[in-house]
Image 1 (cartoon, helix red, strand yellow):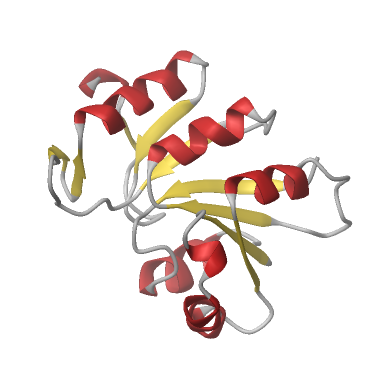
Image 2: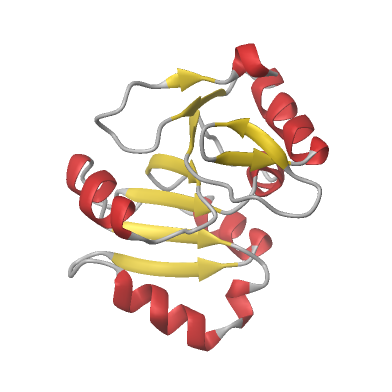
Length: 158
C-alpha cells in the first residue's frame, strides 16, 4: 500500500493553511483529493494543482479510483496527504481496505442540515454518525486546524 502520512477532512481542500502549515510541517510530496464530483471537473483540477506548492503532486480521484491507487505498492519516497471534504469518504476508503491510522478534522462549513460540532466544524447527524463509525474501528479522529494547535480528540463529543 502507498505511504499515507496524513488524512484530513477539510471542505476547503487545498488552501493557505494546508500549503503554509501542514505541508511545511510534514514531508508531503503528494496530495490526493478524494471526491467523486471533483474527479470529473477538469477546471477545478487545474485550480487545485496551481494552488499546491512547487514539487507537490496533486491528484484528484473518485473513491473507487483512489482506493485502487492507494492499494498499489508503495513508491519510494512518496509521502501522501489525503484530503476529503466529508467523513463518509473516509468510511468508504476504509471499506475498500485502505489503512488509515488517524484522521485530522479541519474545517467543515455551515450548511443545510448542519449544526456546530466543534469550533469551525459544522456537521449533520449523518456526518456525526460517520465520525462514530470511523472511531468505532479504532481510528482516532482529532480536531486540529493547524499543526501548532493542540489536538482535540472528538471521541468525547460523540
